[in-house]
Structure formats: C-alpha cells, structure tokens
Image 1 (spheres, rainbow, N blue to C red):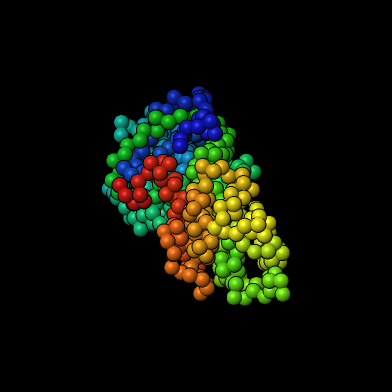
Image 2 (spheres, rainbow, N blue to C red):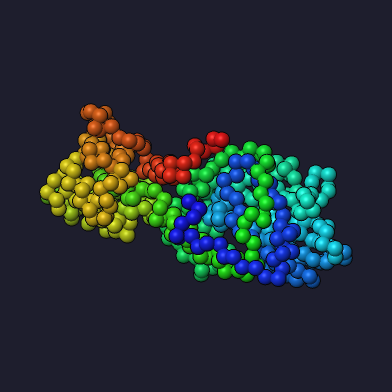
Amino acid sequence: MTSNTYLPPVPAEKDHHFELANQQAPILYFDRLEPFLPVAVGYTVFTETAPSASFKRSIELVEGCHTAIEYAIWWDWDIQHLYELEHIWVYLDKRGKLINTEGSFHGGFHVLRNAEGALVSETERAVAFSESGKHAFAGSAEQLKKLEPFTTAACTTEAGSDDVLINHMFEGKIATNPLQKRLCKRFMKAHAFSPSYDFSNRFDLKSVPLMPWERLKAWIPDRINGWLNQLAATMPHLKAVCLDCGDTLVDEGTEIKDSSEIVLSAELIPGAAQLLEELQTLGYRLALVADGFVQSFETIFKQHGFQPYFETKTISETLGVMKPNLQMFEDALSQLGIRSQDKSQVIMVGNNLNRDIKGANDFGLTSVWLDWAPRRSKIPADTSEIPDYTIKTPLELLTVLESLEIELTREHLNRPHPFQE
C-alpha cells in the first residue's frame, strides 16, 4: 500500500542549492525490522544565521561554519501516527567539509556523535542512526539502546496509539473522519514489531526525492489526504456492527411493560452507553437487529438517547418474523447497503444463542455472544449456536473488533504476527 491513484506522486523540483544538498545528503541506519522508511526530503541551505521554516529553532552559523543544510525528512508513517517529519542539520566549513551534525530528537535536537564523542561520517557525509519505529536520530546505536523500554513499548503494545498527526503547519488542510482514523490505528498496529537493535539497514537519502522545503511542505497535505482516502477505499475492515437490544444493551430484568407487553422503560447494562459512544467515535456503522415491538424500541431509544448511534433498525414486528429467521439479517444488510459478499465482515452481537448466534451463523455474519444475563440457555443446542466470539461485558466487544480488524489488515498487507520476525 505505497502507490495508488489516491497517493499524489512525490514532486520533482530542484533549485540552485540542489547539487550541494544532494552531495551532502546524510546516510541513515535503521533497525533491520523497521517497517517505515523515508519517502522524501525537503532541504534548506543557510549561509547566515536564520530561523528554520520547518522546525522551532534558529540555525546558528558559528565561527568556522560557512554553510548549514537542513534536511526535513518525510515518512508516511511513524509507528504511532500517520506522518512523520524528522530533521538532520549538517554544517560545512568554507571548503565544504563536514564539521558538525545535529539531529531531531522527540521534539528537540542534539549534536550527533558516537560513544567516543567523535563526528560520524561515511565518504565525508553525515551519518545518523534512526530510532526504531519513532525515527528520532542519534549518533550511535548504543545511544538508542538506552531508550529500549520506551521504544519497545511504542513499537509493540503502544503501536497505533494515535491516529493522524496534524501540526500547526497543516491545520485546516487535512480532513479526517472517524473511519479513517480507526484504519490508521489498525494499519500501524498491523506493523507492530519488537525492535531488533540491529541497525544494519543502511539507507542513503539520495535514494528518495530531494526538493526545496517549501515544495515538500506544499505536497504534504495532499499526501496525507491521499493516504486517508486510500485506507478507507482499500483497507479491509468491518462494515457494520449489528446489535440486539434486550440483555445486550438494556437489562431485561429492569424492563417495565404495559398490559400489551410494550416496554415503558428499562435500565442499561453496565458499559452499554460507553460502548455505543466508543463505537461511534471509532466510526463503526451500527444497526439494531432485535425482536419485539417498534414502540418498545422507540421508547428505549428516547429514554437513553440511542438514536444518534444507530444508522438503521430491523425490528421483528415490522418484518413479521423473528430471529433466527434470515430475513432479519437480510433486511439489516439491505438497509445498510452492504453487499452479500461482504457479510462475513459484519458483526452480530446478541445474548441469545438460538436467535442471535444461530441466525448470524446461518446467514454468514461473524457472531459475538454476550454472556452477561442470567436468563436463557448458556449451552449451544448444536454447532449452529456456537458463537465465533464470547464476551462477558459490552466493552469487551471493542477488543474483539480491534483484533479482527488488525488480523484483516495483516492478511491484506501480508504482515507477520506482531513482534514476530
């Protein structure tokens, strides 16, 4: 997933400083398991002290320094968010000889030296070591090893902890929606890895497009928006979550009904309201698929403010059949506009093995049984009532959905299981 019509190509543009910037382009060393490498570089050449246009600092030309070159290095991905911009500064004397190197480091910058304090170079070009997954720069692998607990957590359990990084330069130029943000997280989690600390992956910055910083800056929003569009259009993901209501969202033991068995009020299962909020925040499409009277669900939805969360409702009174009748599930997918071939990527969550789980299984949905209420059988009558997943509380559904989508993403990208070399 690196080239597609959704992704604007890197522009090719040079100015009178290009030859110098290209000649001095640094050499980087990455972890051999690093999943994300630089895509493009923007350069700025300084012949006098002046503020950087891409980093909050001033570039100081001290005595003996004739020229400084700032390399703003672009990655599409950090292991924890979409887009990464790190910097290396090289300082040259009047003969064009390298005399100093600095690198960005978690929002700041520092001089790049090896463990002995010496300037690191190859063929008279600056060398930097890039932190696994996070890409901060150091002058030696040993310095990055000191960050091992932090870096390993970032690349494993905390991979994809953010979604889209939007700094002050690009505010108002990048548009995101909840689905795109969710897929960013899944994409990064699918690339989670345990750093090897074997920095044998040599990367020459001359191998990627090099251009003036202002040209790179102008291209970045289109690149980010391109990635967001591509993820939504091509990344496999769960198309919808169908939810039962009684003993799935509301506690049937608290229902108050009139003489016609219409529900007048009901209390929620602990965690149900938070579940719906989280599902909405993550951009899931939600459908009610429930047996009962239309008026009962109208009352429950009004009582608990459910209406904004659900895109569609399939109710047995309207169709004249009850789950596990397949018409219930066919109607839900039809209302959602989901193709039959995608139904395995639709989740059905319910409390009833005979109605919710059997119906979902027979129709080809992915079934999730909420084993919370003391009511009804907890033993499948036959294999058709065996759920794909079992949860004890509503909020456990979030973990199931995440795991399913990460696995779909890994299969799509042909990535190994997390932390596996």
